[in-house]
Image (cartoon, rainbow, N blue to C red):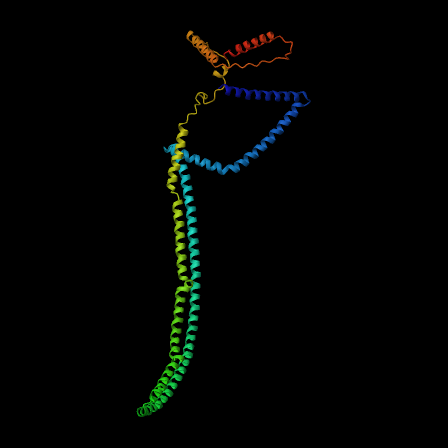
Length: 408
């Protein structure tokens, strides 16, 4: 209260000083010729300008703040109506805070849902585009393979014709040679019979020689057939058809070394990867979204708690506010700041207590004293008297001890 009174006094003194200055200024104007008229004209001009500026500022503020003032007014009317219905301030403030958090949670969920939806749509669209491109490439590849299969078939037919003709020629050569061999063996068989009769008469081995010729002709047919191998040509035709179509089958199915040609498997990988990404985005959305009702409960509790604390807060203004609702500054105890208006009674017990407290402070100071002595001299010469110096030091020490022992 003393600090408050000092502050009020400072402000009042400043106002009084300002009034004195204004009075001096008015007196100076009065001392001039037509000073009052000049002063009146000046104040009228200043007042007119101030009124005009204030009016413009008021109009501009009203135009700018009209929506806010309207909202505040409507909100005040609504709150007053709610209070009239029996609702408490805590319930109203809690409802407002809960509604704000409810809307914020709802907006957050809508944004997260939009992000999740955009992510799902983006991943799904990208996945479909990639799979569509892969499907087109696969169809084109199959079309190329179909054309290649037709070319391979034509080649196999030509290969079969050439190889078949070549095998027929080889077979014909072997057959013609076989015919001549048979004729030669027939002639040699007649000679062998004659040689056999000669060997019987003369005991020679001429029939063995002729038999060797017959066996040699038969072996030559086998050697020629093995060398020309007409059946091998027909076997190569079968191998050509089997190998070429086996390779085409691997190309169409994407097997073995043609595994990269099976784009359908890659389409399956894209599908699995895309669905996994979509599931991950959905899981993130479920984990991030907030329940708006939790926001309502938290906001309501927070707002109601603040309102209840404000209702129960004691500003302790009863000592400053009088019965008429105004702050009492003049009169009362403020007029007696710095002086004692009532009688002061001091009993013997009070004096004894003050004496005991003084004695205790003195003893504490005496027990904890740490004297600090600063002695200064002028120039000490060789002719100085040592006894005078000791006497001076003694006086200085006694004076310092006496000063230190004083209880503040």
